[in-house]
Image 1 (tube, one colour):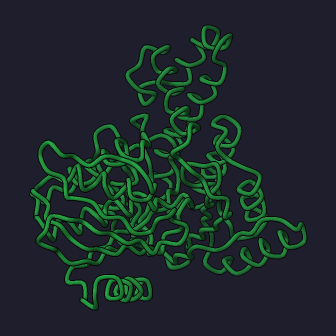
Image 2 (tube, rainbow, N blue to C red):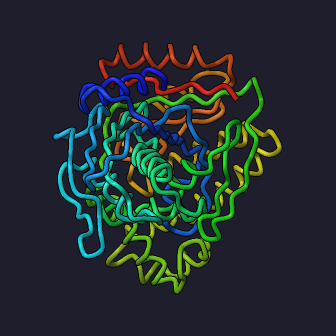
Amino acid sequence: MAAHVEQARRVFSETFGGDEPRIGAFAPGRVNLIGEHTDYNGGFVLPMALPLFTAVVGTPRDDGRISIVTVAEGADAPHRIEFAAPREGAPLKPGSPKWANYVKGVIQHYRAGPIPGFNAVITTSVPLGGGLSSSASLEVAMYTFLQQLCPDDGDLTQKALACQKAEHTFPGVPCGIMDQFISVLGKEGHALLIDCRSLEVTPLPLADPGLAVLITNSNVRHELTGSEYPDRRRQCEEAAKVLGKETLRDASLEDLDGKRLPIMPSVEVCYRRAQHVITEIERTASAAQALKSGNYRGFGKLMVDSHNSLRDDYDVSCPELDDLVAIALEVPGVYGSRMTGGGFGGCTVTLLETSAVERTKQLIQVTLKFQGGSNFSYCAVITC
């Protein structure tokens, strides 16, 4: 991250008349080990924070104006925006460019105020559209920056909820709470089991030096602001309503099978969506127990089952992700692999022995080169 922060400092000085930024804040991206599309259904998720960060550096100004520059690779133009700080009767509104909506949403929903004007530069090592929560990392970094300008009460849960609200209302992504929670509460050397209904968080140590997590980017960029993600959420809500449940967290496969006939004629797809969510919640709870007991092989099998369900029942995988998973699973010492994040592209996450990392990377590289396929890249290798 040091190189990114130095770049942000340089851009700040060049953009804002030679001044050095006086405030800095950062927040991590995340990888979800298992528990996909369960958070907005009140289920369990099991993410870990990454050594990939979004940083915001800046300085307050006294004229009530806000000027922000992004140097994030892949952000849509323009890369500099300027607007008046929100005031009563004059709230911020979403618009273009897309990246600015995440920033504006956090500023609008910040839990203290009034927010002064400021100049700021944003940089990130979290790949945009990679399924590693670049959006929540940006939101939490911006919120943390605002805390230096105008302190709030320091409530971490409310901070995460404010960032989630920002994403709902400005970019228009009806995300669950997982991404913001792990970016706010992530703990080094741990995964977090998050109960997305009660918001209870249980840290689970990842401290075996023989264990590693490999994150591979398909470089197929996903966009959750399109219709596919909201459609999945709506389908889950429809299934829960048919089952007479508040959310799919309260449903079982027996409930689903008992209602299959009414669902099938018109909305067969809702059955498959619900089947994924119900089984994924069960898998995530089982995976947490496997991790506690050091049963990495059992954890890996659950990862593979999760990928197959996301591919077949939730329809959010793609050929590039399927290839990366299949190749990784051929390597001795790989426990499991799956797509991670919202889907439609992005990254895979692989749990494996540390000694198998290089063999896995080499096989992926050789196989895809031979096939003339995917323009993939490695985002991170985390030794536990």
